[in-house]
Amino acid sequence: MKTLLLASLILLAWEIPNFNDPEIYPGIQKGKSSYDLSGTYEYIYPFNSEDLIENQYIILIKSKEGYSGWYYGTSDEFDSAREGYLPAFFVTEMLNLKISNDTITFKLAISDNDLLTEPVNLKLRSTEEAIKAGYSKWSNMINPTPKECWGLIINSNQISLKGADEFQNKSFNRKK
Image (cartoon, rainbow, N blue to C red; front, side):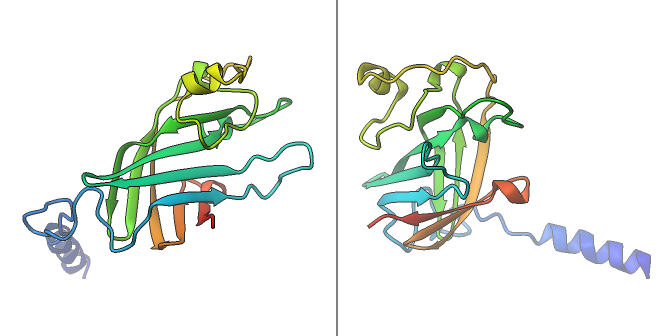
């Protein structure tokens, strides 16, 4: 029985399709979706206070080549545990952004120099723009390592990112 189960699993593994191969699945290409995803998506942090709003945002812009995007987040994305200090905020381009029908993947890569003391205005697209606009750098050091992100496109109004742990899951809803 164990041999049959093992043989079945090996055969199943050989049959797993490569959804990234445009020759096999021509409808799935970088930056393609059956939805128009252009817009601003907001994750509402469940523990916001009157003094500090820690919501996060994704902005997607569609062009002829596909989508480009920016992520507005907090240092919690890269910090294993926040203890005794307020979070930092950042804006960064979503690197290696790929949208394939109902999935989204991208990479977040920032340094300590990209962390700021307050939420970044959604009109700004980089740390440099934020510093020129008067934002201050965060004084704590956390050494953020690049992070691969993936999620599901629920519909044109919701993107659900999946984290390594349950508490890292985030649903971003399109702002109107």
